[in-house]
Image 1 (cartoon, helix red, strand yellow):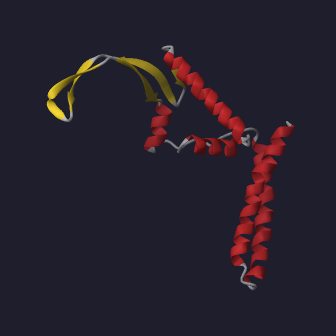
Image 2 (image 1 turned 135 degrees about the vertical axis):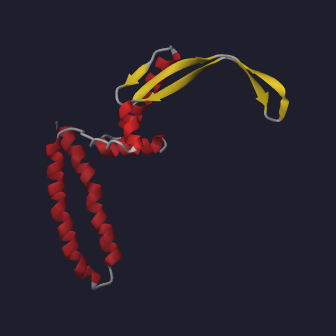
Image 3 (image 1 turned 90 degrees about the vertical axis):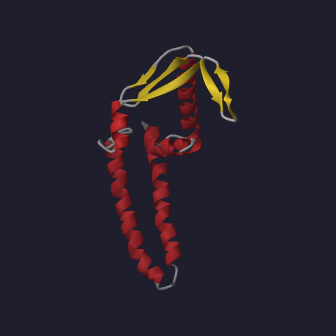
Amino acid sequence: MNKAELVNEVAKATGQTKLDVHNTIASLLHSLTSAMASGERVTLVGFGTFERRHRQARMGVNPQNPDEKLRIAAARVPVFRPGQELKAIVDGKQKMAALNVGSSEPKKAAAKKATPKKAAAKKAAPKKAAKKAAPKKKAAAKKPAAKKPAAKKKAKGRR
C-alpha cells in the first residue's frame, strides 16, 4: 500500500475528504520526522515506537573487490519497534478490532437502508435478464453502494 492508497482507505473509512486525510497524514509524518530528528522517541501504544539510534562507524568490505576494506561512517538512523498488539495481529494470534469511527447508530441505519435497495435490485434483475441486460443490472447494483458514503458524509457534517 502506498500513500495514495492509504489516503483513499482512510477517507472511505472515516467519511472525510481525501484532501483532509492527505493533510492529516502529511502532518503526522512531519511530526514523526521532526521528533525523531531532534532525538525524541514517539510511542503509539499497541502499534509501536519510532526512535533515532546512533550507528557507530565500522569496517566493511567492497563487494566488487573483497580484498579491499572500506570504512563506513557513523550515522543516525530511524528505527521502528512494533508493539505487542501489532505483532500479535500480524502473526495471526489476535484478530484486529473493528474500526469505530463515530457513533454506531448511523452505520446500522445505513445498513438497514441498503438492504431494501439490494432487494429491489435483485427483484428487478429477472425482468431485465429477459432483455439480456444482466451486465447493466450488475453495474446498477454497485451504484447504490457508491452513494452510501456520500450519505454518511452529510450525516457527519450535520453534527
